[in-house]
Image (tube, rainbow, N blue to C red; front, side, top):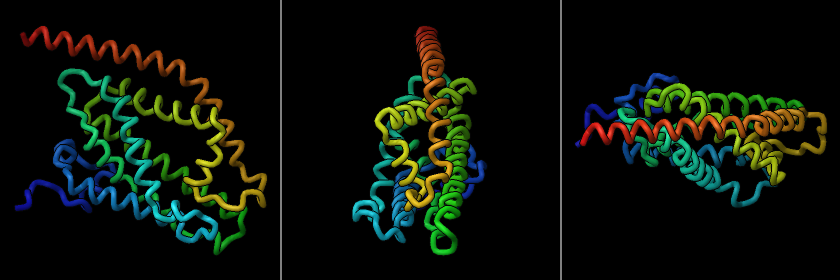
Length: 240
């Protein structure tokens, strides 16, 4: 029998995407929400390359988006879990993965075949706009979840949001993968025909900011982890 208090996937996703999902609703997300979230992630992965004639067969399956969500959620869980203090809500990998996959619908913007209606330089700029909107929306949703769904304090929320982003961008830049990832995420094609599309400038700015931010963020993160461990230890001693 269906729990009348458990929100449907459509209602839960709609409220999550509009920052209105309550902590109680978040606590009631279960395996069915995860399954449908993974399905949405797969569909937007398919939509990203459905009209790309040179995309590989693997990319067109959409499974890369599913793998990305699974790996990203694991990385975020590893970063966030040590920051929890006593009294804050339990953070499970399954729940975090569910929330991450439920943020997939905005990425349907990538399925719009703007290359068919405009010139390639204009299409690249539109796709970059789509990428900025979707990425910004998802980062804001992560902040919302860490604050309301997990109950982290604001210093931990900000650090747990910015540190993974800085580490990812720095790592991609170090291995010369940043440009390729941006092209895949944004569906950018034939950039050789539009060398002044602004992508390189954006990547340079992101790489510089990330490189400068990583060390301070790691220091803040270490302090917050030590404080969280101290609070957990103090709570354990008080409960004996």
